Length: 379
Figure 1 (cartoon, one colour):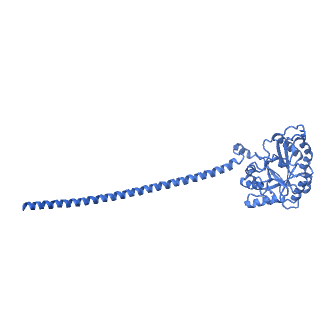
Figure 2: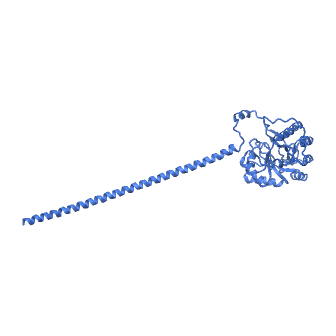
Figure 3: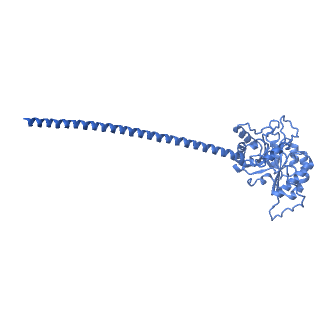
Protein backbone atom coordinates (compact mmCIF):
# COMPACT_ATOMS: atom_id res chain seq x y z
CA UNK A 1 0.00 0.00 0.00
CA UNK A 2 2.79 2.27 0.87
CA UNK A 3 4.59 1.40 -2.34
CA UNK A 4 1.48 2.26 -4.40
CA UNK A 5 1.25 5.64 -2.74
CA UNK A 6 4.84 6.22 -3.36
CA UNK A 7 4.44 5.25 -7.00
CA UNK A 8 1.38 7.46 -7.25
CA UNK A 9 3.34 10.38 -5.84
CA UNK A 10 6.14 9.81 -8.30
CA UNK A 11 3.69 9.61 -11.13
CA UNK A 12 2.03 12.85 -10.08
CA UNK A 13 5.38 14.43 -9.53
CA UNK A 14 6.47 13.41 -13.05
CA UNK A 15 3.21 14.69 -14.48
CA UNK A 16 3.69 17.95 -12.62
CA UNK A 17 7.19 18.23 -13.98
CA UNK A 18 5.95 17.53 -17.49
CA UNK A 19 3.24 20.11 -17.05
CA UNK A 20 5.73 22.59 -15.76
CA UNK A 21 8.10 21.70 -18.58
CA UNK A 22 5.29 22.18 -21.14
CA UNK A 23 4.44 25.54 -19.69
CA UNK A 24 8.11 26.57 -19.86
CA UNK A 25 8.32 25.46 -23.45
CA UNK A 26 5.25 27.51 -24.32
CA UNK A 27 6.70 30.54 -22.59
CA UNK A 28 9.99 30.04 -24.41
CA UNK A 29 8.19 29.75 -27.74
CA UNK A 30 6.26 32.91 -26.94
CA UNK A 31 9.45 34.75 -26.13
CA UNK A 32 10.98 33.53 -29.38
CA UNK A 33 7.97 34.72 -31.36
CA UNK A 34 8.12 38.09 -29.63
CA UNK A 35 11.81 38.35 -30.36
CA UNK A 36 11.17 37.34 -33.94
CA UNK A 37 8.46 39.97 -34.29
CA UNK A 38 10.77 42.60 -32.78
CA UNK A 39 13.54 41.55 -35.11
CA UNK A 40 11.18 41.64 -38.08
CA UNK A 41 10.00 45.12 -37.05
CA UNK A 42 13.59 46.28 -36.68
CA UNK A 43 14.45 44.88 -40.09
CA UNK A 44 11.42 46.59 -41.57
CA UNK A 45 12.41 49.89 -39.98
CA UNK A 46 15.96 49.43 -41.20
CA UNK A 47 14.72 48.77 -44.76
CA UNK A 48 12.46 51.81 -44.53
CA UNK A 49 15.37 53.95 -43.40
CA UNK A 50 17.50 52.52 -46.22
CA UNK A 51 14.80 53.32 -48.80
CA UNK A 52 14.43 56.81 -47.41
CA UNK A 53 18.19 57.31 -47.52
CA UNK A 54 18.31 56.10 -51.13
CA UNK A 55 15.39 58.37 -52.05
CA UNK A 56 17.10 61.33 -50.41
CA UNK A 57 20.36 60.54 -52.23
CA UNK A 58 18.49 60.22 -55.54
CA UNK A 59 16.77 63.55 -54.94
CA UNK A 60 20.11 65.13 -54.02
CA UNK A 61 21.71 63.83 -57.21
CA UNK A 62 18.70 65.04 -59.18
CA UNK A 63 19.14 68.53 -57.72
CA UNK A 64 22.85 68.40 -58.48
CA UNK A 65 22.17 67.42 -62.10
CA UNK A 66 19.54 70.16 -62.44
CA UNK A 67 22.09 72.61 -61.08
CA UNK A 68 24.76 71.35 -63.48
CA UNK A 69 22.38 71.64 -66.45
CA UNK A 70 21.45 75.17 -65.38
CA UNK A 71 25.11 76.16 -65.04
CA UNK A 72 25.84 74.65 -68.47
CA UNK A 73 23.00 76.65 -70.07
CA UNK A 74 24.22 79.86 -68.43
CA UNK A 75 27.76 79.12 -69.65
CA UNK A 76 26.49 78.56 -73.22
CA UNK A 77 24.54 81.84 -73.15
CA UNK A 78 27.59 83.67 -71.82
CA UNK A 79 29.82 82.10 -74.48
CA UNK A 80 27.36 83.08 -77.23
CA UNK A 81 27.18 86.64 -75.92
CA UNK A 82 30.97 86.80 -75.75
CA UNK A 83 31.22 85.52 -79.34
CA UNK A 84 28.89 88.22 -80.64
CA UNK A 85 30.61 90.85 -78.49
CA UNK A 86 34.21 90.07 -79.40
CA UNK A 87 34.39 87.75 -82.42
CA UNK A 88 31.93 89.54 -84.67
CA UNK A 89 33.37 92.96 -83.83
CA UNK A 90 36.67 94.23 -85.15
CA UNK A 91 39.43 94.05 -82.53
CA UNK A 92 38.62 96.97 -80.30
CA UNK A 93 40.28 95.73 -77.14
CA UNK A 94 43.80 96.06 -78.57
CA UNK A 95 45.26 99.42 -77.76
CA UNK A 96 42.19 100.36 -75.71
CA UNK A 97 44.31 102.56 -73.47
CA UNK A 98 45.75 104.39 -76.43
CA UNK A 99 42.31 104.87 -77.96
CA UNK A 100 40.91 106.23 -74.70
CA UNK A 101 43.66 108.85 -74.55
CA UNK A 102 42.94 109.84 -78.14
CA UNK A 103 39.18 110.02 -77.65
CA UNK A 104 39.27 113.55 -76.28
CA UNK A 105 41.11 114.90 -79.31
CA UNK A 106 39.61 112.63 -82.01
CA UNK A 107 38.43 114.63 -85.02
CA UNK A 108 34.72 115.20 -85.33
CA UNK A 109 32.83 113.53 -88.19
CA UNK A 110 32.38 115.78 -91.19
CA UNK A 111 28.76 116.70 -91.81
CA UNK A 112 27.91 117.76 -95.36
CA UNK A 113 24.45 119.16 -95.89
CA UNK A 114 22.43 118.41 -98.99
CA UNK A 115 23.17 121.32 -101.36
CA UNK A 116 20.25 120.80 -103.70
CA UNK A 117 17.06 122.81 -103.60
CA UNK A 118 13.91 120.78 -104.17
CA UNK A 119 10.22 121.26 -103.64
CA UNK A 120 10.09 118.59 -100.94
CA UNK A 121 9.74 119.91 -97.40
CA UNK A 122 11.97 117.18 -96.03
CA UNK A 123 15.39 116.82 -97.62
CA UNK A 124 18.05 114.46 -96.27
CA UNK A 125 21.58 115.46 -95.48
CA UNK A 126 24.14 113.99 -97.84
CA UNK A 127 26.22 112.09 -95.33
CA UNK A 128 28.01 112.17 -92.00
CA UNK A 129 31.49 111.12 -92.97
CA UNK A 130 33.66 109.31 -90.42
CA UNK A 131 36.98 110.99 -89.61
CA UNK A 132 39.94 110.05 -91.77
CA UNK A 133 42.29 107.47 -90.21
CA UNK A 134 45.45 108.82 -88.56
CA UNK A 135 47.65 107.14 -91.12
CA UNK A 136 46.00 107.33 -94.52
CA UNK A 137 47.87 105.38 -97.17
CA UNK A 138 50.28 107.56 -99.04
CA UNK A 139 49.50 108.30 -102.66
CA UNK A 140 51.94 106.56 -104.94
CA UNK A 141 53.95 108.78 -107.26
CA UNK A 142 52.29 109.17 -110.60
CA UNK A 143 53.28 106.37 -112.95
CA UNK A 144 53.19 106.11 -116.67
CA UNK A 145 49.80 104.94 -117.94
CA UNK A 146 49.49 101.21 -118.34
CA UNK A 147 48.75 100.21 -121.91
CA UNK A 148 45.35 98.52 -122.30
CA UNK A 149 45.66 94.80 -123.05
CA UNK A 150 45.32 93.52 -126.55
CA UNK A 151 42.15 91.80 -127.67
CA UNK A 152 43.82 88.40 -127.26
CA UNK A 153 44.94 88.81 -123.61
CA UNK A 154 42.67 89.32 -120.56
CA UNK A 155 42.70 92.70 -118.86
CA UNK A 156 44.47 92.16 -115.52
CA UNK A 157 44.74 95.82 -114.54
CA UNK A 158 43.44 96.82 -111.08
CA UNK A 159 39.70 97.45 -110.85
CA UNK A 160 38.08 100.66 -109.62
CA UNK A 161 34.37 101.15 -109.00
CA UNK A 162 33.06 104.70 -108.50
CA UNK A 163 29.57 105.00 -107.00
CA UNK A 164 27.69 108.29 -107.13
CA UNK A 165 25.40 108.32 -104.10
CA UNK A 166 22.33 110.37 -103.19
CA UNK A 167 20.83 110.47 -106.67
CA UNK A 168 17.16 111.39 -106.93
CA UNK A 169 16.84 115.02 -105.91
CA UNK A 170 17.93 116.90 -109.02
CA UNK A 171 17.34 115.67 -112.54
CA UNK A 172 19.68 118.14 -114.28
CA UNK A 173 22.71 117.14 -112.19
CA UNK A 174 21.86 113.47 -112.72
CA UNK A 175 21.89 114.00 -116.49
CA UNK A 176 25.30 115.68 -116.23
CA UNK A 177 26.78 112.68 -114.46
CA UNK A 178 25.07 110.22 -116.80
CA UNK A 179 26.80 111.93 -119.70
CA UNK A 180 30.26 111.06 -118.30
CA UNK A 181 30.81 107.31 -118.42
CA UNK A 182 28.48 104.43 -117.79
CA UNK A 183 31.16 102.51 -115.98
CA UNK A 184 30.06 104.69 -113.06
CA UNK A 185 27.38 103.26 -110.75
CA UNK A 186 24.46 105.38 -109.56
CA UNK A 187 22.85 104.85 -106.15
CA UNK A 188 19.34 106.28 -105.84
CA UNK A 189 17.63 107.37 -102.63
CA UNK A 190 14.15 105.89 -102.09
CA UNK A 191 11.16 108.21 -101.90
CA UNK A 192 13.16 110.94 -103.68
CA UNK A 193 11.30 113.08 -106.24
CA UNK A 194 13.05 111.66 -109.33
CA UNK A 195 13.94 108.15 -108.20
CA UNK A 196 12.18 106.37 -111.06
CA UNK A 197 13.18 108.81 -113.79
CA UNK A 198 16.88 108.72 -112.84
CA UNK A 199 16.92 104.92 -112.44
CA UNK A 200 15.22 104.46 -115.82
CA UNK A 201 17.55 106.94 -117.53
CA UNK A 202 20.67 105.27 -116.06
CA UNK A 203 19.43 101.82 -117.06
CA UNK A 204 18.63 102.94 -120.61
CA UNK A 205 22.19 104.24 -120.98
CA UNK A 206 23.63 100.94 -119.77
CA UNK A 207 24.67 102.21 -116.33
CA UNK A 208 24.30 100.19 -113.16
CA UNK A 209 21.72 101.26 -110.56
CA UNK A 210 21.77 100.67 -106.81
CA UNK A 211 19.41 101.46 -103.94
CA UNK A 212 20.93 104.00 -101.55
CA UNK A 213 19.27 102.76 -98.37
CA UNK A 214 18.83 105.42 -95.64
CA UNK A 215 19.50 104.08 -92.14
CA UNK A 216 19.66 105.63 -88.70
CA UNK A 217 22.95 107.42 -87.82
CA UNK A 218 24.35 107.91 -84.33
CA UNK A 219 23.46 111.61 -84.60
CA UNK A 220 19.74 110.98 -85.23
CA UNK A 221 17.42 112.93 -84.95
CA UNK A 222 19.74 115.96 -85.17
CA UNK A 223 20.97 114.55 -88.49
CA UNK A 224 18.15 113.48 -90.79
CA UNK A 225 18.73 110.44 -93.03
CA UNK A 226 15.69 111.44 -95.06
CA UNK A 227 12.29 109.92 -95.82
CA UNK A 228 11.96 106.16 -95.67
CA UNK A 229 14.90 105.64 -93.30
CA UNK A 230 15.21 102.36 -91.43
CA UNK A 231 15.30 103.13 -87.70
CA UNK A 232 16.47 101.00 -84.78
CA UNK A 233 13.25 101.72 -82.90
CA UNK A 234 11.08 100.06 -85.55
CA UNK A 235 9.68 96.58 -85.11
CA UNK A 236 11.13 93.82 -87.27
CA UNK A 237 8.00 93.73 -89.44
CA UNK A 238 8.06 97.52 -89.93
CA UNK A 239 11.74 97.52 -90.86
CA UNK A 240 11.52 94.60 -93.30
CA UNK A 241 8.28 95.88 -94.84
CA UNK A 242 9.83 99.31 -95.46
CA UNK A 243 12.97 97.77 -96.96
CA UNK A 244 10.94 95.61 -99.34
CA UNK A 245 8.90 98.63 -100.45
CA UNK A 246 12.14 100.50 -101.29
CA UNK A 247 13.55 97.54 -103.22
CA UNK A 248 10.34 97.30 -105.22
CA UNK A 249 10.01 101.07 -105.82
CA UNK A 250 13.41 101.80 -107.43
CA UNK A 251 13.60 99.97 -110.78
CA UNK A 252 16.59 98.09 -112.22
CA UNK A 253 18.64 97.92 -109.00
CA UNK A 254 21.51 95.43 -108.85
CA UNK A 255 22.70 96.14 -105.33
CA UNK A 256 22.32 98.16 -102.13
CA UNK A 257 24.56 100.49 -100.14
CA UNK A 258 23.77 102.38 -96.97
CA UNK A 259 23.07 106.09 -96.63
CA UNK A 260 24.36 107.12 -93.17
CA UNK A 261 23.43 104.24 -90.83
CA UNK A 262 26.32 104.46 -88.36
CA UNK A 263 23.99 103.35 -85.53
CA UNK A 264 22.06 100.61 -87.32
CA UNK A 265 25.05 99.15 -89.13
CA UNK A 266 26.70 98.50 -85.75
CA UNK A 267 23.81 96.23 -84.68
CA UNK A 268 24.30 92.60 -85.78
CA UNK A 269 20.66 91.55 -85.37
CA UNK A 270 19.32 94.43 -87.45
CA UNK A 271 21.97 94.04 -90.15
CA UNK A 272 21.10 90.32 -90.30
CA UNK A 273 17.52 91.33 -91.06
CA UNK A 274 18.63 93.74 -93.81
CA UNK A 275 21.09 91.31 -95.43
CA UNK A 276 18.60 88.42 -95.32
CA UNK A 277 16.23 90.47 -97.51
CA UNK A 278 19.08 91.58 -99.79
CA UNK A 279 19.88 87.87 -100.22
CA UNK A 280 16.27 87.03 -101.11
CA UNK A 281 16.30 89.71 -103.81
CA UNK A 282 19.64 88.33 -105.13
CA UNK A 283 21.42 91.67 -104.80
CA UNK A 284 24.93 92.60 -103.67
CA UNK A 285 25.71 94.90 -100.75
CA UNK A 286 28.38 97.58 -100.41
CA UNK A 287 29.09 99.00 -96.97
CA UNK A 288 29.56 102.77 -97.21
CA UNK A 289 31.52 102.31 -93.97
CA UNK A 290 30.15 105.24 -92.03
CA UNK A 291 31.02 103.45 -88.76
CA UNK A 292 34.22 101.63 -87.79
CA UNK A 293 32.26 98.94 -85.91
CA UNK A 294 29.94 98.07 -88.79
CA UNK A 295 28.47 94.53 -88.71
CA UNK A 296 27.50 94.39 -92.36
CA UNK A 297 30.51 92.28 -93.34
CA UNK A 298 29.74 89.49 -90.85
CA UNK A 299 26.05 89.57 -91.84
CA UNK A 300 26.98 89.34 -95.52
CA UNK A 301 29.19 86.31 -94.80
CA UNK A 302 26.38 84.72 -92.79
CA UNK A 303 23.88 85.03 -95.66
CA UNK A 304 26.49 84.65 -98.44
CA UNK A 305 25.69 88.01 -99.99
CA UNK A 306 28.29 89.40 -102.45
CA UNK A 307 29.93 92.20 -100.49
CA UNK A 308 32.50 94.99 -100.59
CA UNK A 309 33.45 98.02 -98.51
CA UNK A 310 34.01 101.62 -99.48
CA UNK A 311 37.71 102.47 -99.61
CA UNK A 312 37.66 106.23 -100.30
CA UNK A 313 35.11 109.02 -99.96
CA UNK A 314 35.93 111.29 -102.87
CA UNK A 315 34.30 114.56 -101.91
CA UNK A 316 33.55 114.94 -98.20
CA UNK A 317 35.47 118.16 -98.67
CA UNK A 318 33.69 119.45 -101.80
CA UNK A 319 36.68 121.25 -103.29
CA UNK A 320 38.22 120.44 -106.68
CA UNK A 321 41.83 120.02 -105.49
CA UNK A 322 40.77 117.76 -102.62
CA UNK A 323 38.66 115.59 -104.95
CA UNK A 324 41.61 115.22 -107.35
CA UNK A 325 43.80 114.04 -104.48
CA UNK A 326 41.16 111.52 -103.36
CA UNK A 327 40.91 110.10 -106.90
CA UNK A 328 44.69 109.65 -106.95
CA UNK A 329 44.45 107.89 -103.59
CA UNK A 330 41.72 105.62 -104.97
CA UNK A 331 43.89 104.58 -107.92
CA UNK A 332 46.86 103.99 -105.58
CA UNK A 333 44.77 101.69 -103.39
CA UNK A 334 43.58 99.78 -106.43
CA UNK A 335 47.19 99.27 -107.55
CA UNK A 336 48.06 98.00 -104.07
CA UNK A 337 45.05 95.75 -103.44
CA UNK A 338 43.92 94.87 -106.95
CA UNK A 339 40.61 96.69 -106.55
CA UNK A 340 39.08 99.69 -104.77
CA UNK A 341 35.69 101.33 -104.25
CA UNK A 342 35.22 105.10 -104.26
CA UNK A 343 32.03 106.94 -103.35
CA UNK A 344 31.16 110.43 -104.53
CA UNK A 345 28.10 112.65 -104.53
CA UNK A 346 26.33 114.80 -107.11
CA UNK A 347 28.27 117.97 -106.35
CA UNK A 348 29.16 120.32 -109.21
CA UNK A 349 32.81 120.07 -108.12
CA UNK A 350 32.72 116.27 -108.28
CA UNK A 351 31.23 116.35 -111.76
CA UNK A 352 33.87 118.85 -112.91
CA UNK A 353 36.83 116.81 -111.59
CA UNK A 354 35.48 113.49 -112.89
CA UNK A 355 34.93 114.95 -116.34
CA UNK A 356 38.62 116.01 -116.33
CA UNK A 357 40.23 112.93 -114.79
CA UNK A 358 38.20 109.94 -116.03
CA UNK A 359 40.16 109.57 -119.29
CA UNK A 360 43.42 109.51 -117.31
CA UNK A 361 42.03 107.09 -114.72
CA UNK A 362 40.83 104.69 -117.40
CA UNK A 363 44.37 104.45 -118.76
CA UNK A 364 45.69 103.27 -115.37
CA UNK A 365 42.93 101.00 -114.07
CA UNK A 366 39.79 99.27 -115.22
CA UNK A 367 36.78 101.42 -114.38
CA UNK A 368 34.03 98.88 -113.68
CA UNK A 369 30.45 98.76 -112.35
CA UNK A 370 30.16 98.02 -108.64
CA UNK A 371 28.93 94.48 -109.27
CA UNK A 372 32.35 93.47 -110.65
CA UNK A 373 34.08 94.53 -107.45
CA UNK A 374 31.77 92.35 -105.32
CA UNK A 375 31.74 89.31 -107.60
CA UNK A 376 33.69 87.36 -104.94
CA UNK A 377 32.79 86.83 -101.27
CA UNK A 378 34.14 89.11 -98.61
CA UNK A 379 37.22 87.49 -97.10
